[in-house]
Image (cartoon, rainbow, N blue to C red):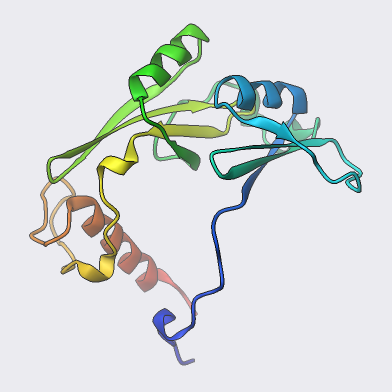
Length: 190
């Protein structure tokens, strides 16, 4: 089997992220959460759908809710409060005032976890919490760290622990991401 480099393919004609689809037990509980906590608003949904759901929109992205009252049959952990783990799957929204977000979550009595990411003197504040169905949401001021294509970094795989920073022209996280990608590629089986 011959492996072609990804860069030899022409990029797909993508424009942007359109929406994220989320299964939920109660459309209206989830609508309230996405409206009241995250500031989304309901938009018209095609009438041809033969299942309960709702579409919300704001910030240039849609949230599509699909109701499945029997969701618990497939995911038993959803009934138990799961630990809020920043390394879990999540959707992230950039915000302008993380401290205000934290005060709002406190006012609503919601559980949350905060984290700080630092790179080259830049600092990103993050706050993580769950929606009514246990999906993780992150709000952060991620614009504080510039987006630098890995191709512009001088990447060298590290052999030492993650606690030590590898010498490179890019930041620590770019090197960790590149090393992780390299290891994932080596682990592919054919």
